Image: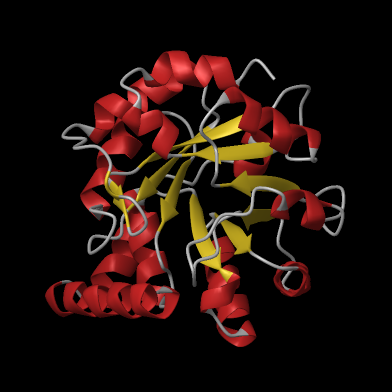
Length: 257
């Protein structure tokens, strides 16, 4: 599944590059206002941070929410107390677009994450051109040289890589490239099975000074408490916010802890 998702995302990026050259996207990226300071926005504090996600669908669940106005949803997330906003820009299985990210950037003053299957520098320049402050890099999807190259490019453009891991080996690979923000995804992107305890098993391997993000398997405040007690500085929440009809209240319930 992960291989197919990455291949599809890269193919779609190649189609976009045929319509808009790399030089044009680079120029747009450099013309953007500087990216926001993600490390300051997500720095550890006395209660958990939430990255609230704009997510229309997923391969495991299918359609989740229509989301005709991502800007309005982003404004609700900001009102509810989110520290950052994640935007799924992958179109084939998640129903997202870069236009969603651009709309969110205009509507919110929080850091914005481009969540996609990034494997090509063109996608990184696209992210900055659209206003992203963070860019997801999935360790399982990339060889170490590509991971390091893309991470360096993200940083050169003033953004922050969110380096996603699923195992102790992948955490080591993230640390080897100097990751300042490491996510642990409870969902295995090969099988799509969930293991909510994976974060707790890996958190001790992530040194202090590196922001630790727990991803997936969040349905209720108890899940946020579980991750917080396991050492998470930040919890990324998607489906629970787009499916319950009241994201502001849900966020505030999650943020009590």
